[in-house]
Image (spheres, rainbow, N blue to C red):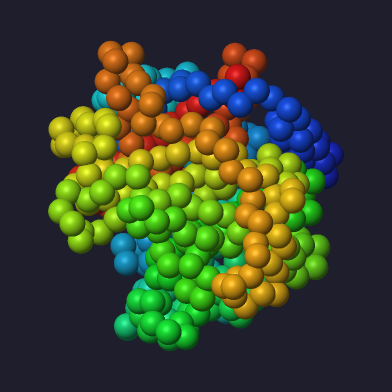
Length: 398
């Protein structure tokens, strides 16, 4: 693949890995101010290599060539499990409610293979997040798993080579595996809730530790988030040299901030991705949705609110209780990680004064340096829904 050609030469490989590490390590000391640069929108219905574009559940910047990787959370319904290589020209991002998609370039698409080296069958995997490890020339990705009346699938963290070939799995503790009723709310149920499992992957700047987080709490730890009620999610680490699980901490997901239009309709709040600032500090996305909620911002193509709320939090694990090896946290004293609001994206406005309409933002990465400032780039998962859109948002770190 074109994307990884620079990494085949050891000298350049080492240089890029060092540069990324030094930049990330410096970020915790910066002021916590994020400025809206602009957005670009790819309408649902666009295609690449004969497949619908969409379902982009994460994004990762490749500093060596300025490209990005984005995983698709298609469960092999519309095509094979896959990830994309793309380009984004941030100079063409606009603070506009209808910015277009100029500057979004689709470069390549790679099929992800199962442990037998074959494309995944339908509903065999739910890819949600990925990160490139330039030092080891590997990609780590999360499979959310499943908990329904039809089937149960354990959440997994996996490695693959840049060409999509499998390179093994990490050992996820058994208490994350779903067991019991489909809803996860019956007495004795354990493990992740359906559609609320591993959606995030982060690599610490020293390249030694991989982190993921369940979107919400485990069934034996906490009920799912709802209006007026948060959830106690577990952060889980892995040593990248040994593959063994390490520390676990509790992250307190906030309540759903807006009620659905009709009582009883679907609503959720959870963590779809996170980004490591240091060995202990992270930026975390909380993405909330409530059916019909009158959230700020109106989508240009529907003239309706998107009913999404997106917030970025800065968290610090120092001083938090390590709960690794605990089958449940119920009845035990637990100090969660420190959590500070960085930005509520609903406060951002376009140049005409309109509120930024937010789709289902699920991915975050550091981007290039623009005008002397490091950037953050976010991406939304449109769920292949015509009422939604694939949205790229750029922020500068001041």
